[in-house]
Length: 116
Length: 110
Image (tube, rainbow over all chains, first blue to last red; front, side, top):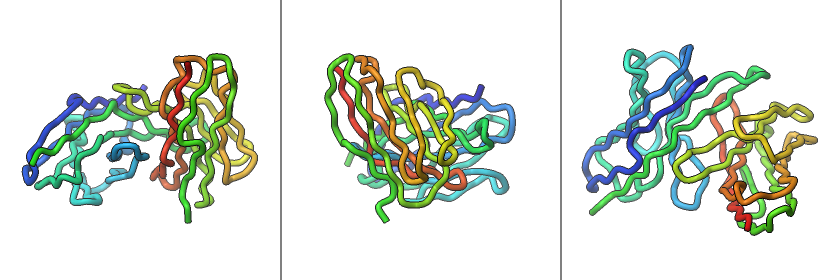
C-alpha cells in the first residue's frame, strides 16, 4: 500500500527566509506526486505536480519541488516566503484505481506559520 | 464557471439522523471524489466515481453512501450519523490527475 509521510507537523519561518517542507513516500512503482496548499477555511489548491521527466518541478506562487527517487522524497521549497504563504501544506501520491483512474493518498500536512 | 460547489457549509446533526451533502461541478469532469479531513490525519478518501453510474469505495467508506446519476452531481449520504463522523468534508473533481476541491462542509454530530 502506498503512503505519504510529512514529518514536520508545524514549521515557523521568518518572512523573507527560505523554506523547505519535507515529504517522503512509499510506493511500488513510479509515483505521481503532488503538493497542495490549504488556506484557513478553504479547500485545497494544487501547487505543483510530478509525473515524469525533469525531477525539479516548478509550481505556482514561486514554489518548486524536487523528486529524489533514491531518497523516496519530494520536498517543497521556496527561496523567500511571504506572509501570505501561511497555510497548511499537503503532499500526496497518486495511483491507479480499480477503474484505471487516479486515487490520491495524502500526508497528514505541515502547518506553516510566518513571523514578521 | 463556478468550479466545485458544496452545500451546506455548516451542519449540526444529532446521532442517528441522516442527511445528504451536496456536491456539483460545472467542468464536465468524469472523476469525482469525497474526502474527510480530520486533525492530524490529512485527507482520507471516502468514495469516488469515474462517471455517471460508476462508483467505488475509498479508504473509509463505512457509514456513507454515494450515487452518480449525472456528470455534474455527486452527493454523499450519511445514513445514520455518528459522532465519529464529525469532520470537514471535501468534494473534488479531477482531470488528468489535477483535483479541484470544493470549499468544504463542516459537519458536527452531537
